[in-house]
Length: 369
Image (cartoon, rainbow, N blue to C red):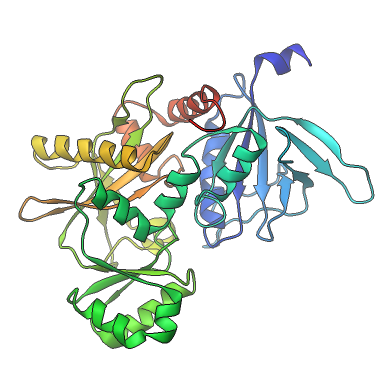
C-alpha cells in the first residue's frame, strides 16, 4: 500500500439508482464532488445506472439540469461491483477476469428514494462491512415509508396530522371502504406515494373524483399511498446533525419554505425545475417556538435511530401548534438544498458539512451498534 493511500481515506461518492429520483441524486453528487477536500480524501465517483449497473463515473458526467432535463448516469463507464465479502470494489470488463479496484474506506450514498435511501444500499454496505454516511438500515427504511414513519413518531409522543394509508390490495379490492376512510379526514387532502421523496407524485384532492385521480397518480411511483388531511400552516424545516462521541445530536436554525408563482404547495416543479421556492433562515417565529421545534426535531431523529444528517419538516399553525410532517434521512444535498442552507446559516458551511459527515462515518464501527 502506498504512503498516499495510507494517509488519504478513499471515499466512494455513490449516486443515481433505479428510481424516479435518479436525477435529483446526481444534482447532490455534483455538489459533493465539487466541495469535498481532495487533499484530504481520495475520491471515487460511482454511478448506479437506471438499469442498476454500477459504473466508475467518467470525467464527462453531467451533474446539472440542462434544458429542463435532469441528468442521468452515463452507463458506459467501467463496470464495478461491491462483493458482500469485503470492502474492495471489483472491476468487471467484458471478456476479462474480474480484478480488484481497491479498498473503499467510506461510502457517501448521495441517493434518494426506493432501492437507495430506503435501507437497501445501507444493507448491502453492512453486509460488505463498509462504513457509510447517514442512517442505518432500520432508520432509513422507516424514514422512507411515510406510514410507518408517522407510526413511530406518534409512538414517541410527537404530534402528527391525521392520515390514511392506502395499500395496494385495499385499493384494488376495497376501494369504496378506502374512499370513505379518506372522506372522514375532510377536504382537501394531500395524496403522495408512501415511499418516494423529492416531492414527486404529490397532488391535492378537493373531492372524491380528484382523490381517485390523485391516488392513481401517486401509484405510478409506489403502489402504497399516503393520504393526509390538509393542515393550514407555515412550512418550517429544521436539520439535525449527529454529534461526535456521546454528545447529543444538534439541531440547526429553523427555516421557512416559501413557494412562489402558481404553485399551491412545495411540489417537484417548484423545488427543482421552476426555481420558485426560497428559504427564510432563521424562520420568523417566536424564539420559544423555535426552541421547541429544534427539540422536537432532535427527538424525531432519535426516535428513528438516525445517524449522520436528517431534515425534519413541520407545520406551524395559526393557533401556535407545531405538527411534525416528516423526517428525511437523506435530504436533498446540493449546496443550495434546504438542509445544507439551514446548516450554513447555523455556522456550518457546505464543505465543512460534507467533511463532518465523512468523519462521523469513518469513526463509526460497521455492524450492530
